[in-house]
Image (cartoon, rainbow, N blue to C red; front, side, top):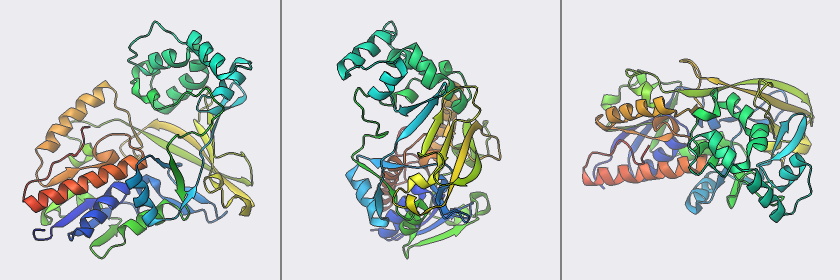
Length: 386
């Protein structure tokens, strides 16, 4: 290895923590900063002082992956407890299981269809004239037909994204499965779980290395980046350039906290699909730690509202409409010509990334940086296409 580098990492979420750990283990010195007073970013968890429930402060996060290496890595830093994610949805006053499965289909249609019969019925309902769906709505109509689309997807999507589904890309819906069995497991990955002591403890463990210094309540704007050999920036891409080209669009979330006798809702996540209900879902956080459920007398619930992110809001989901993609291309061009900085993570690449994908991409970033340093070559600003 060449002389150790002094690396600044902006952001102590999963991406920043994993890059820091990999570089520190390779012998480099790393300073990790975060403007919040905690690590783990939007995955941050903490004990609710009133109830003792482990709360997912910025909304629920379920760890699921088919990546053996990522699963081994997270298990090196926490005890992963088994967790099977099940979602229920309220449509026109009735409760259904999600994602769409045989139970959902039979209940919604008032039928008792076998798997083959249900598949044939959905084929009949689907709009076969749509051969190359471009929008979310077209994908849904081709996927399940108008009745199921309007019941389960149209209103919820308008609330979640703030635009008509005709303006959203088809790829958003392609993430959701359609099952002709009674399997209501939300995720199909072989590895699923939640850290026993929460995500923040897991990220703390990742950052616990003699080559890593952590400073919270510190922003990139208040840090002398020129004194470092290289910077890994995991904050919002447009913020790094002081929004000089305009602001990329994000959705943000607002939560209303409520404490009720336990149990209250009876499930972790209850979606509200009807457009005239102003919130998108209610989450009951004790169910994200099923090994603890019996110990609580009070339960914490969060009612979730989605809105366009303003300048002072926490960005959650990149919108990535046509205008945003055009603006993103311009910011990527700026980034490509910014020396000594690599942009990474959900915000740095303006992409929706599950936790396991964030960890894998962070490993890729670290490998690229180590190789570049060893060869005395300038690192790439991005490792993955965005």
